[in-house]
Length: 105
Image (cartoon, rainbow, N blue to C red):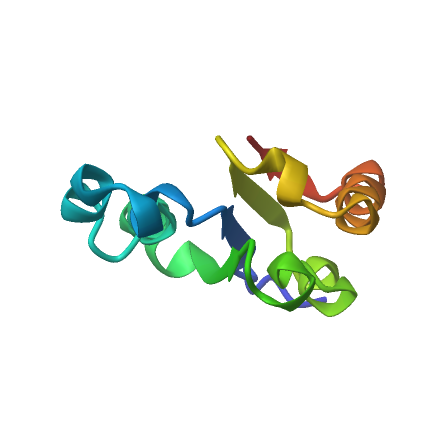
């Protein structure tokens, strides 16, 4: 049996709305809040994690079955566009959380 520690697979999900429409947010987060979140995770976990970024405007909101099947922990930054998330994707995320995927909201 291998004792090699596998990296935590983290998907950072974000709406990416405020960055597109609010100058002050764009100034504070020029690469988006999702990038700031992913950089904070990487800073604290280093090589213990592999990070993927998914955004609301990506196909299937970036949360395809393949992405979620390869995610140990999903971080969710939502604030103003919850109504834009399709019910199908909400159900998909719910199913993966029910099966043990971590979720940080």
